[in-house]
Amino acid sequence: MKTVLLILLITLATIPSRTLAEPANVTAEKRPDNATVYKISKQLCWNCIGEAIQFLYYHNLVRAAKLEFPLMWDTKLENYAKWWAGQRREDCQLMHSFPEGDFKLGENIYWGSGSTWTPMDAVGAWAGEEKYYTYKTNSCEEGQMCGHYTQIVWKNTRRIGCARVICDSGDVFMTCNYYPPGNYIGEKPY
Image (cartoon, rainbow, N blue to C red; front, side, top):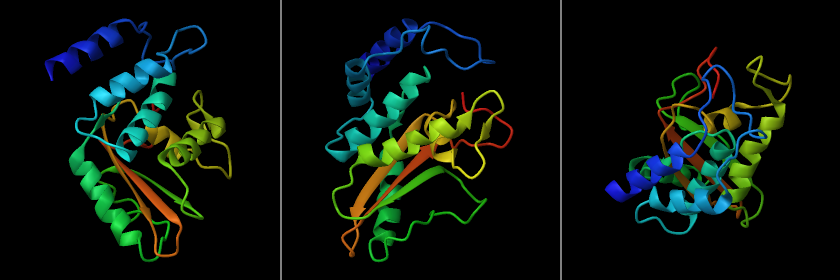
């Protein structure tokens, strides 16, 4: 544990500081490379195998692009995500685990036709919403979604747990839960 925190602190110490009022200018500041993000992700994902490290690594790549702290894998959030994915196995319905407006956790959900969809596909789809998000106005292009992306990069979020299930139909349902949750109205993600 001390080794992980020491490595994390050393890594973060090498990231240039910036003001909280402005987003990171990733063209002017050097973001961590993919190998560094993967190494840190593995250290923040104790006893993780397979899909767990994939989910965490791809999330942390997106966060690194905004110079945000990496997420840590949380087995309680993973168990919650597994429970919800299990609930969706029969119908593969793209629905959240909480009633609208009653979120206790952040949550991103994904559905893909066929059984070959991976954590990279889900995180890539969510992160792809960045092109519709405008930081200056903290708004999303009309008719588009940005909330999945902003949850991934939310400045206060520190933990994640995800699950993937192949539904009875042969399609894929994936869900990730985040704590603390993000997407507070009127607040910028980073």
